Length: 326
Image (cartoon, rainbow, N blue to C red; front, side, top):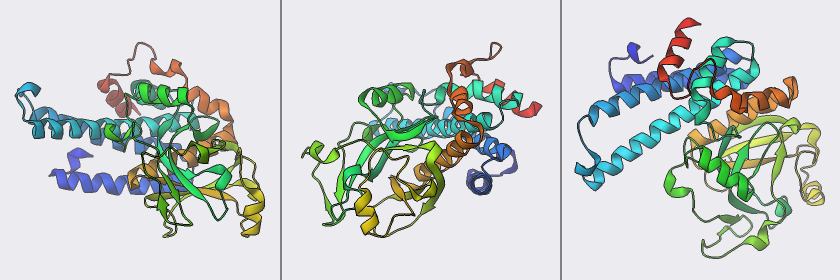
């Protein structure tokens, strides 16, 4: 794609256009494995182009010789590039889960597999309602670290939190920077429009952790609702309008609000890129689990995919050769 553009600005426009088209396609048809794979290759090609530019820009310049501002800029560029490769890994992994018999997907996954926050497909900060306040007049929102695997999306346990951050090289998601990883949790009480102070512990608000089973998800969509906390929203609808899939919910309160039968919940991401990534991951993961079983997704996340026939996960050339051979 970069060879079609005559400038960086034109290339970026082509990338945005391609991502929009392929993303729309896979949301309309989650079984469209080629569209999912193409999303991954667009991200990968874009990351490779940016990586080359950064290497040229800083060729022969030692980090010790750079000003603090220049060093910070370089680190930001490298973080962005890594996040793009992580996004590529997500979609290539999902394409493989959709069609495991296609060798092109297997070879490409072997190259990028190590970039995933294994054993999870995706991990990062999201804001969501605290389960035991959901649907009540005291509904309270909390910023928490979530993980997504072949079973569910859930607020991470302490061990899952550490594991996903370590395996992702302390990248919470393709869109979350290092400076936010250890930040305090944030709670928002919608009834009073209040945001709790970061210094005030709110463990008394938490109750049971939030968990949504992929097998119970019937719809996922990006949405805009001015009544929600600030951020980019993703709506997750549950099958048959039941409380199955949520480990806890104030069911009577939901019924009193007239929400029974259309049950679901919102997640709030920090920006549009993160929200799109979560929406796509939830759409495709839930489809894979419901149509092919959780084993298909578990196999794609298995450590065995990190190498194939001597192909190493760090080899960019192998991925590009695989793409040409398709």
